[in-house]
Image (tube, rainbow, N blue to C red; front, top):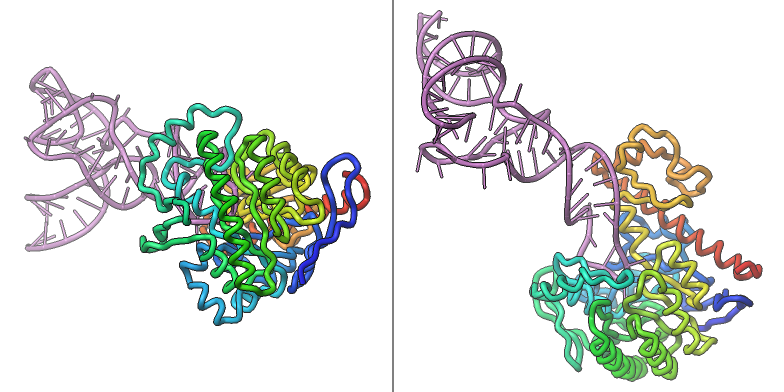
Length: 383
RNA sequence: GCGGUCGUAGCUCAACUGGUUAGAGCACUCGCCUGUCACGCGAGAGGUUGAGGGUUCAAGUCCCUUCGACCGCG
């Protein structure tokens, strides 16, 4: 049912090209995984997503458990049927929400990325006494719903049960994504807890049975010894593949990923969680990652930032108002084939819904095609 | 013609009995977003308070003149 085959390995980096087979189709890697958190890629129909060349979509356990509920999704025949996406799917375990609703919650703007040594961010962590929506203990995480404030609890076992109900092809172990601002001792403690949760996730997954492939998640923050230890421990467990999670140093994410890749079994796929800016994908592939998911292309699109070969274009800038050229000359996407920057700028300024759709089409097309180009480069020995 | 109400940022409006560099929302300009709390967040620019004169230590606030808008009565 689940299979991973490596077609070509790079001779001068950790890059490889391969194929992941799932019950709902194949994923040619390296691949970009489109994010559809709440069982929808925001602003796009599944047909649009497919027409961009996307092969796989990732949804979220925490969000769908809260709304509309995993039992309903199961009754509807699973995520594929429910959201009308026939291709391969992944679900994240809810582990990231331990971070986004925990340490990162509030006005502080703590990112999972940190740039170099960032001493000015420290005060935020301390000032971060805002009531968090997530609290961690050995058994799992207590969440307060961000929708209605109601209390919920996620454990490795619950995450597995929910993900089995959702029915994606690839599911992830329940983990803790730590803040990059957390001290070493906490990173270590959280990593070791994540390892115990990985074992529990695996046990529950086996108990439940079913066609899903479970990926374990490597943590360890920005520390080489922790990353190596985590990848050895998680890599030694009976997972179908691996996710690489957690926080990174913006400057040398690739280095951290290669510490991990070198310790993971070579014959299993590696998914770099939440990474997806163009340069990061290139660095990730070179460091041995096979798949990537990221909200960046769609979220940035909705906020008017468009990807081009020459960098980011903010369509809301005054210079776009009367610019009748497409977002990017030569781009093959539906948006660039049919609409001008001026039209996009108009839609954004008028707050028309089509703005989000056309911008998302462009950004996803850009990123998916970038990844396809990278795959060709690996296959043809150029990378 | 007489009486009244009101003129504050591009727009809609704040500013207790006159009291420090006249505020906000929207619009405008720019930036940010990496396993979605996210059609979100942040920053900036923008006003000789309709005009002119007066009272006062001090006027968007009080007085006079004038211009304009609206309402009422002739």
